[in-house]
Amino acid sequence: QVQLVESGGGEVQAGGSLRLSCAASGIIFSINPMGWYRQAPGKQRELVGRSTSRGRTTYTDYADSVKGRFTISRDNAKNTVYLQMNSLKPEDTAVYYCNVMVNGMNYWGNGTLVTVSS
Image (tube, rainbow, N blue to C red):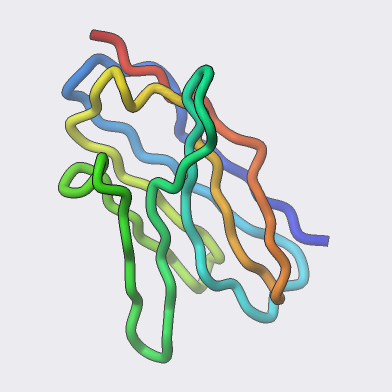
């Protein structure tokens, strides 16, 4: 069984920063890709960004709404993915979910709330 533990959510003022982390534990042979989604109140869940390793190269793609402000990084030795969020806006308020493919199976974190006040 694989478990995902998210941390780092909270409340911040507009223009501030937060860093989310998501650590996977269990029997892990492969973990790829690793990414983040979010769901704002009354809206559908949307992709924030995703990190995919192919050989020695890691590719990261982002939603247009967060490009230049959010950065996804990963520590493969720790089976952990991070989401650094800078220049936060009130419209970034949402529950953020990590999403990882582990051993060919898709897993979701429980979600962590990020609230950005104006």
